[in-house]
Length: 61
Image (cartoon, rainbow, N blue to C red; front, side, top):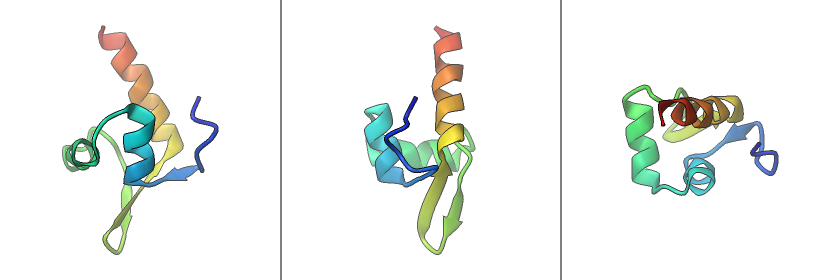
């Protein structure tokens, strides 16, 4: 899952992978739903975090 992306994803990568807007990604990061880190003003999100988020959303439905 998500093998086409680097191990560390950007907000734009996550938005593309999840088919959501970048503002929604920032919201998920701000609420702590997605765990990431910042280098300067740029968010970096581990691919494993995104994969776990996808798995957790599948369990809710």
